[in-house]
Image (tube, rainbow, N blue to C red):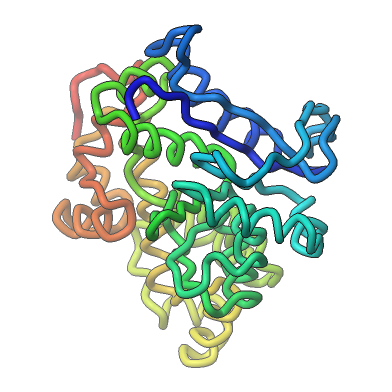
Length: 331
């Protein structure tokens, strides 16, 4: 495909997420600016909608769109997310166009809740997919024929690419660039945009404490705040059940219903979250972080990091440490 211009078509609608549109466009625009020429840009990016014209995004900023093009000639189709997807999945004419465009396109992608549109068009059946962590359960329930990957930043299954929430669009677009142009050129774009070419970990980046506190059960909200203040303690089920004034068996059942994971896994995630912050913001040695967060020893914390984030504590610190954190490591 050297010397050709690839057509990138971004499908938006009223109330689409602004960042889904803007970040997607910016990655390809940056590649054009750094590595293309005005005479032969590597990518031609257009934002389209069912009726064309101005659309109001979720942030209140209007975006100019073009009418839906003929399906033929689209290299990569990208469907944005946002609250407007509730109407988009009911628009039969729009779904017909998505199916026709997907049949012709080399790649078909969604950002955030845009996966619901592709699923409604019947394009993701029996495929592995990602969406924003908040909508994973809804997508799984409304489309049981999909395999929803709760913790993925993005997923590639065949020619279909689906990504998690908002900024994960950048991760996905960089992956598309890498597929087209290789590691070295994509790294130039990532460096220019001051982002990681491939960030470690998954959607475990959202706050476990906030997720727990919004569970809807006041007693558990208090318990979760107590856990966050006692991560160095022995937080087994018996201890937590006693704090909640329940039997261990009843506590475990209700906890799973409210927080959608077992108590032990929730505690581990909170410990990892705190350890990450300490690794980023303090000069504490890894062993000291492990002890303070209740892992007991460095090896147990290393295994937990690899399970949840797919990266070791030491590697995590190297990638994410505060640039001011240059003091000698202390115990």
